[in-house]
Length: 281
Image (cartoon, rainbow, N blue to C red; front, side, top):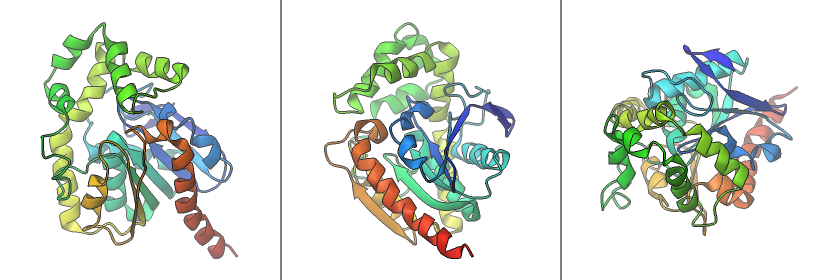
């Protein structure tokens, strides 16, 4: 546990080398990256926090907008003595990763964004043609989802885990961990606070794009259901972007298709590692 930006953040740190910061989404904790960390940790210092309000990290009353989450991430790097990091974010972890790269490009060497939308930026119209996913509105109503779901957390979280792996599911130990992390009114409140802050996050993203371009080398990875919507949002604002669409893969890419994700991350991050070695006397 580290005290950063006014909250206690649960974080695991594995390996040695240039820092890589991995930001999870909903309904996950840092254990989302279980199948990824061992591969990266052979050459990198892999930093995996539970996001504000989620897992074992503090659940404050506010601060769930992407800008504050980006500040949490930067403060965590400070606490660990890391001036820079490659940053990867999926789902709810993608907007703060993006804002950190936009606001503090000197701190982010490379950026990986997966299966998320960046607020109201153009490019996601096809994905949103039928409206946003149903749970966005459900989670956004203060206290409603908490009240309805008390006692049914396992079924609710389980639905997302099954849907996010196209029915293949996740290992029982990880499923049980995620369910426990989202059980109880306060745990649910911490989760749904991220959705209730989305209008603020969307304005922050729009302001960042209006002020400048994404100069950090970036990779967008899509699967099902977001597909190429994230890449379409990024293309007009990014200077250096590569994109990938993972076939036969659900939303939870790190657990559903780590066999595909790990090589993509290695190839992208290795460019950073090669650059660092050339700069070393």
